[in-house]
Length: 232
Image (cartoon, rainbow, N blue to C red):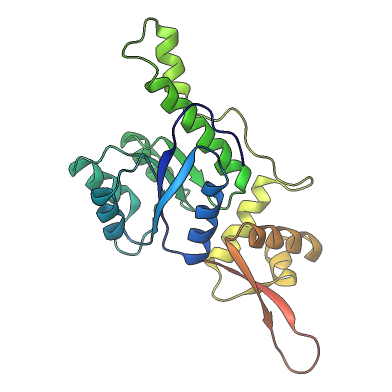
C-alpha cells in the first residue's frame, strides 16, 4: 500500500451507478494509503443520505447518475451544508460541463477510462492540498496562496502503455460507448481506420480498466468471435 502523506485518514464516498466501475473505483481508492472508502452508492439520493449520516471528506462522484446529474448533486450538497470536496469521475467531455464543474468548486475532473495510477496521483495531490489547508490559520505571502490553489493539481499524467495514445483511446472509447451492441476487433478497426490488432489492443486495455467488457459472439459453427461492449 502507498504510504500516506500527512496524518489521518480521509474518508471517501464513491458514487457510481455502474456496478463494474463502482467496484473498480472502490478497489482503487482502497489501494491508496491515507484514504478509506466509507460507502459506495449508485444514486444521488443514496449519496445525499450518506453525507447526512456519515462524516465524508471527499466524494468520488460520477456525473451521469440515473436519478440526477452530478452537477445537481453538488448543488444539493452545498444547499444542505455538506462541505465535502468533490472529484468528478465521468465520461462527459462537454466543455460546458467542465466549466460548470469549475464554477461549483469541484477540485478535480477525472475522465474515464483511467488506470489506477491516474486516480492514485489525483488522490495524493488532493491529500497534499488538504494538508496545506490544515497547516495553519493564515497565509503570509502571495506565493503561499498560489501554492494552496495549485495543491490539488497533478504535475504529470499516468502514462498509457508504450505505443498507445490518448487520442486513439478516446476514439475507441467513443465507438464502443455509442455502439448499439458489441463490436469485434475487426469491426472496431474498420470504424477507426486502424488494424484489427491495434483495435484489439485498445479494446483489451479498456477491459482491463473495467470500462468495457468482452463476451463471445456465436455465429453458426466454429470458434466464437470475441466482441467488446461499453460497460455503462
